[in-house]
Image 1 (cartoon, one colour):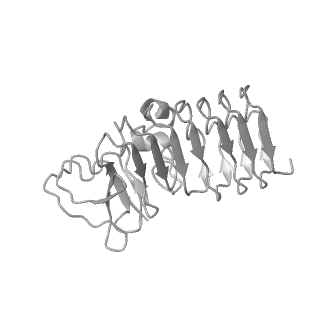
Image 2: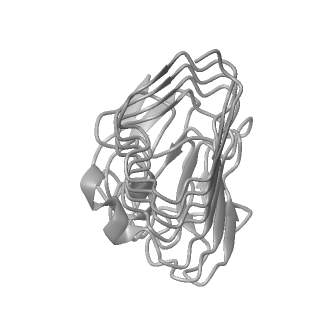
Length: 231
């Protein structure tokens, strides 16, 4: 597995072409910032670099800051920190994993990372208020604090294949009105949806074997729970 360090190619203004292998699993902050002549592959409002077999290895930036929608390619391995920073008109995004990479990388597996939040508890400061819908299509876990205090979000789709929802994963996401826990999830940790004050409906999948007692604390508007589990 290969990592690219912080500022590795920063301000390499003469750089026009680069080949990135499929073994890359992480990339440092500002690794390709100001590489203004670097040729990229464009897909669904974002710029990518990679290789002939997979031109989508690294998503380095949005095509512009005024996009309303983005869909990250399913073959993407890494999303640069701040790739969507300043996209103040973004209303929906589809992502194959939460954070920088599918790999277990400390401090990068939170939603705010792709908007420029290098620290997990800063996520809410960086995610644009315009963003309402997030569709997650892959990954095995929603990590601790992944979406903490993203109050503007109204819809988050968690994919089947997710096995756990971490501590405070959606803490304070007051805009969410409903959530569907897929059948693949086995555990919902402490405070996972605590403070989701707009939450009205929850569906608990058949595979859930443990829900922490504080998982839905403060969800005082909750009026419907569909429990498909044996709990």
